[in-house]
Each structure stands twice: as C-alpha cells, then as structure tokens.
Length: 195
Image (cartoon, rainbow, N blue to C red):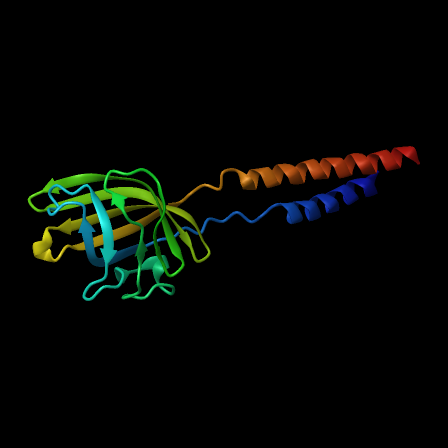
C-alpha cells in the first residue's frame, strides 16, 4: 500500500505538470500617440459626429505614430503608419480592430464625446489592446481635433491599463488535472484489489 501511495504521488506531480499551464499575466504597459489629419462629417468640429477618413500629415498616406513608451518599445517606431477604422462615430459601441500598428491591435469597446464646441471636439473611450505576445489589456484613449484652421489635425493617445482576466481557463485546467489524478488512483486501487 505504501508503494501505491508513492506511485499516486508521482503520477499526481507529473499530471499536474502536464495539465496546468503557468498562469502569468503579461499586460501591455505604456502609452502610444498618433497624429495626422482627418475628414469629418461636417465642416466644423463643433458639430461633427464622426470621422469619415484618416490621412497622414503632409501629402496623403496614413496617420503616424508620434510617440510611444513602455511595452510599445521594441516593436513600434515613431513615424510608423497606423491603420484606423472609418467611418467612426464619436458616440459608438464596439469596433473590432479600431486601430493597428506594428502587431498591436486596439479593439474599441465604447466611445463618447466629452467636450465639443468653439471649433474643437474631444472624444474619450475604452477598449482592449493585444499583440506581440502580450496579454489582452484594457486601455483608455482620447481623440482630439480642431476646425480646418488647424488643418484638421488630430491627436490620438492610448494608455494601457490592466490585463483582462483569463476567464477561468487556468482553474479549468487544474480541475481536469485533479479529475485525472483521481481516475488514475481509482484504476490503480482496482488493480491492487483484484490481485
């Protein structure tokens, strides 16, 4: 019986090692800022409700990374092109793949106008950032643009927050491992009893 206990202990350790994943959150940290020009659905930022197009600074192109730090270092370079979804309503719900740059993807959860008038509009929102081996991380962002006197330039800044919980997959794997250990214990016990 003593050998059976040792066998079960060895099997439990091996099974636990095989079925339990190492759960360690690696959230995205830091900030990233984009700049460029945009087309609005009205002639004034004071009355606009959406962006109808994104453009780079100067002649055409895409918006660019203006600055970055934290987890964005090593993957992102200032000046890199950014793809941003349009048309985009300032008061919106979820927009998958709202922006993409150098392997990072931001999925918009919601956005709303926080200030508007006197030729400008500011929109704040929430969402999740993922990519480049990091965990899905919640984040906040802010978009600002002014009337054409500023050449419809905009700035967009995003700040990463906390890793999004795994939804229980680690606990589920632990449960499966424990069920497997119990099945092995019962199987070994039945073999010993039948001898």
